[in-house]
Each structure stands twice: as C-alpha cells, then as structure tokens.
Image (tube, rainbow, N blue to C red; front, side, top):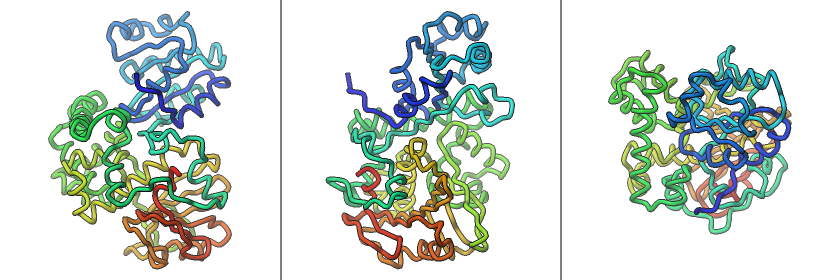
Length: 410
C-alpha cells in the first residue's frame, strides 16, 4: 500500500472537525478528497454505489440515523437530498464532528437556498502541489513567507525550464503524479478529459454536445492563463456566445476551470475588468492538445501560459491554509500598458504582486509593472515577486525580488 502523503486539507480538517458539526470537502474529481476524508470517518457511505445509495434516496433522514460518527458521505451530488438531511440533523443536534461530505461538482452551491449555509464549512482540495508530493508541508505557505519578508530561496535540486515543464505535465492528480509512468500518465489524463466532457458533463447538465464541448475545452486549453474575450473562445470552438457561456459555467461547476477576477483600484486607471481563465491543472491542457514536453518547449506562447497555470495551481492549493487570508486577482490595463499575472490581496489590505516568467534570468525591465504598482500603491504594497525558471534569487528593486519558481515549495 502506498504511504499516505499529508495534504493541506489535513490541517484544516484537524482544526475544524473538533469544533464544527459538518465539513464539506470539495474539489476536482480524482484529487484525493475521499482518501483524505476517510482518515477521519468512522462510517463511509459511498453514494456512487447503488446498493448504498438506495436507502438515502428514499429516506435520507432515516438512513443516516444511528450511524457511527463522523459519517463520510462520498459523492454527495449523486444524492443531492443528503444535504437537506444533514441540515436537519445539524439543526437538531449541532454536536462537533458529525459529518464529512465530499464531491467533485460545485453545482448550485452558491445559491441562497443551498441547505449547507451555516451548517457545512467548506474545505477545498485541489490537485497535489509539489510541496504535497514531496511531503514537505512543514514550511509556511508561500504568501505567508512573502508577507513576512522572508528570503525566497530555491528548493534543493531546483529544476531548469525543461524540469518545470516535466513537473507540470506530471499533473497534480495523485494517481498519475505519484504512481504512473509517462506513457500510462498520458493515457490517464486523456481519459480524464474524455470522462469529464462526456459522463461528468452529462450528469451535471444533460443534453450538451460532447463534440462541441471538447472543442470549447481545447480552446480554453490554448488560452489558459489568458484574458480572453468571449468571441476568442467561442469562435475557436465554432459555437455562439450563449453556448460558450453555458459551457464555461458547466466546466466551472465541474471544477475543471477557474476564473480569476480582475482587481480594481482608483489608484490605477483604465483597468480591464475581464477575468483571467485558468484550467485548474496545466497537464489537462497538454492532454487535450496532445502535447509532450518537446512540443510545449517549441511553442513559446503556450509555454508561458502553462508555466503561469502551474504557478497559479501551486499558490491556489495552499490558499485555505495561508494565515494572511489572501484573495487572488489579476491586473491589466487597457492596451496592455500594465499587466500583473497574480495579485494577492492580504487580509489586512496589503498587496503582493507576482509576475511569472519562463526565463532563467529576469531583469529589472521584467519587473517594471511591479515597480509601477509599488509606486502607485505606496505603503499597501507589501512585495513584488518575479518567479522565474532560473536557479538564483536576487533583488530587482526596492521591495521587488526575482526568485526561482521552486521557492514556492522550498
């Protein structure tokens, strides 16, 4: 049996379960939600098995009564009524540590009438970060280190550009990242995409054309980490705007795509308000486009997009355990006069601005947009970081440093 590698979510579960009655563990399919949650459960109900689900479809309140707690309900979206039953159980007896719920679909969880409001506290699990894969969760999250002004050193055996490409192609899904060879990994990822756009999409929103949804997914893969107009995507996919918006919403609900909002401030003028669209795992882009490391390295535009997507996935994975409580945005002015790949707005209002470069030795010119932000924002500007593919960390200006991407997990 493969040794369990601790996840960021373990810290949250261990902190919250002794105090709260129900935790909702959500993330993309095959990211290890059930494996992690099962470590804390006395009873596991797998709702994707008809023999176990039938009683909960018929009468969930009665079926859950008397089960040894904590009870893990896996794949809640297949029996949505279980959420209402948990609400009623928690309202009647709000004892800590009663329920764990896992699922790989966002669905209508933001709706005002969602029964989990005030009862289920969300714990996100994304793909495994490199820190999780290496088993080095003892160090502080990256943004906490930046906020404290710590030196950003490279990790031991920091990779070069090809090494980073190999890492992002390995993906953050535990099965291919930890256990499969390159050939089997490619097949696994291609099958994941196929499953996503056929079976999973059908369960969430039946009637969608898999062929057109695949073309739309390919268009997003080509534009990952980009600020794209709707027209760019839907014309590339051969669909109209309404269909494109429906497909984007579907892929967001399936936790395959994430939209990073634009940041606004009255200190910067003519900001673009369009969100930045990311695939949650850069390996999925390579899988749907059928690209290996050599093909990625030969395509400069796509290389930059995948490196940006990789960095965003590393930062996203530890947001929930970052004590600075950041929210992530991007910044761009019209006509591209200024662009910042990622902006973290910290809990106290401080700003950390991050640029990502597929370059081994960025210069002060590569940090000019960070310098502009520093000068415009004044004391609220905590730090600027240019993350790059080279081996060294060095200063690029007042409050701005260049650091290897491997500093994310050093």
